Image 1 (cartoon, rainbow, N blue to C red):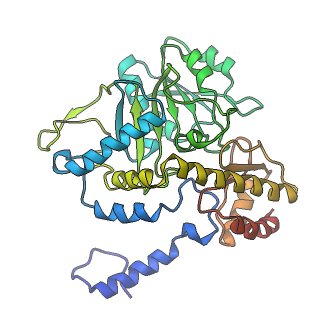
Image 2 (spheres, helix red, strand yellow):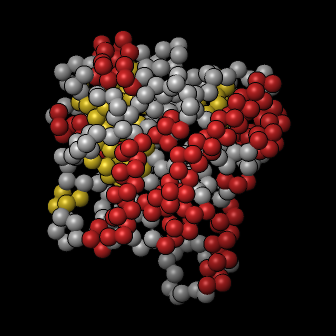
Image 3 (tube, one colour):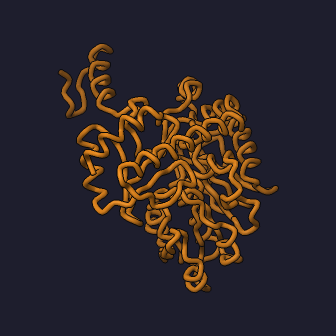
Length: 377
């Protein structure tokens, strides 16, 4: 048995190392086990795994050494810019995920405006609280109405001369709602509007549903936006794409590296997942993404129907591939499910049970989960 504490004095054989690695590996939940219903990530395509491994030493924090990776990054940025209607003069930056992109959006807003107040709908991801703490900004929470959309009247009332940024969400973490970004932009006016499209960025463009609100740069008031290829983009973790309507004003000199300036929060930054995503994007195309999402939505409605058969009340009719049910004791149900080896999650606003129907979720997995859920209610 390998000691799990203290730094090793002597090297070990590969066999001993792999023994411990496999022990740890088999303790992790695998997306293919059919029991993960609480994650917005999924198993990346095989081509993404293969390509990711080829670029493990790439570090775009020192870009001059990796011309090939940079070329793929430019293609990714351009293709996704087209998907989200980015305007001429846009800036795109690869980041570690939407959390980092959300921080960058508020960072830009603070530095450009010299102000610190941020209007956040209650539905906003917890990363915005982290961003406000890091940037010494003041979060002002906007309540949700009965439809679980931000109360626009309250938002308009709380917008004032001290406001640096307004946030809207395309694919809320709890319910999967695409908020009315166009209406929010009208309220924000000249104030920086940042859109968190971590989930919606790679779902809404591939859904044939005219009832879903537009969320991207086709709305003139949208100033920055982030979306995650490592969610419904089906690429490897981690990768987010941050877009700004114009050039980001924040950078620091990096005199010892091949790039003159760095604009990202991290120095060493996401690299291998960029060619991995390039490969997935080229492999699937819009048609492939559309087919996968259609399958996810079909299974989403199936899960909702099965939940209703247990007497559960859906919070909303699903907009994206998330199903939520009202429940008075969501923590208890989540814990009981976990004790039986099943991963589901909960909502806070309102209290309930949350199921994310990612591509790894099969109809059989749903049917296998329902009896365990019934016993856990």
